[in-house]
Length: 266
Image (tube, rainbow, N blue to C red; front, side):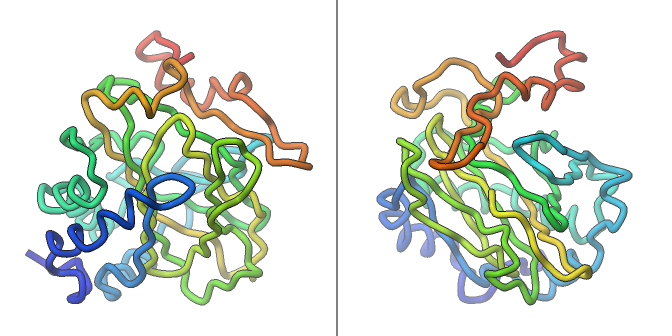
């Protein structure tokens, strides 16, 4: 098997054991950041083959709460991207996630990449603070974990697009993460794991904020992680802003998918 990992992290079981407490006890909710976790050559190839026409072949979101591009069709991914995502969905890596996070329920991957895959934010792109949808629309599984892997070489803080993690009361941004190349962020998905990148991207014309996003699920979850019923993405207002607060305007986020299943998420 091709070595997708930086040699420093090759022993995934050991890495999970060493970092489990750090993950579970992180603020404002369980999370961890790893730098240079993966083989740099592989990520460089993924970046090199990142589709330049994602706006035409993928999904475009342009609302009061977000301005971004995404692609979740593996047939339109590069060979390197497909192989890398397959590795992230492999048994060894999923077992690593289970042990790292302390999640007792067996984590399950998403073959449909709902909401995941490749993400891109060009100049003025953003994603307001939110809690993610909490159930997979077709598999009916509970969403438990997010993984974000950044592909941005030469990215600086003044380019914007930082990932922000907010507290339950939406009173304070506790963690601010710059989306630099080969940085992986892992965090638990609950009804109050508020996160986003509301600072608009301001980068040179040849740069955009690129990432790989994968989500993991389980059959059941602790009641402490769920304070609401079944819901889609819930956007939250930051203090002193005109941010949208709620999810009523965003039912169409899943519109095409739910028209097929004839069900609503809220």
